[in-house]
Length: 147
Image 1 (cartoon, rainbow, N blue to C red):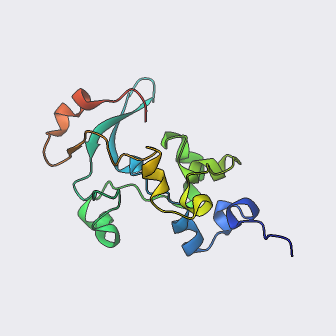
Image 2 (cartoon, one colour; image 1 turned 45 degrees about the vertical axis):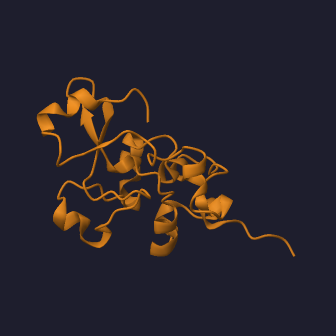
């Protein structure tokens, strides 16, 4: 019996069920880093400043209430796929939107939610500061070269 084609290869982002969409998140935590945009160039800079609700396993401790608690929290939706340019190039949402294959460490491929941390593709071991510990006007001091 032939293997079925995985949903992320057979469906567009807009065709996915809510469960499939959520399962695309690899748990890297990079979208929860505070970002700064250069008003002139439009370039997005990631910082080492992370949301206060980020847990040690790179998950949101307030996921269901995140938009209530953090009004500017990113809410990725299929209809916004054309705006995913700011996501890191390792993000599964961006990868699928661009027609690329998920990396071997992605939980859906590796069938191991911790593989991403083992290969250092997440922010789990980064030297981070919480957004409620650093004034926003100082975030520029925490810009990182790559994400």
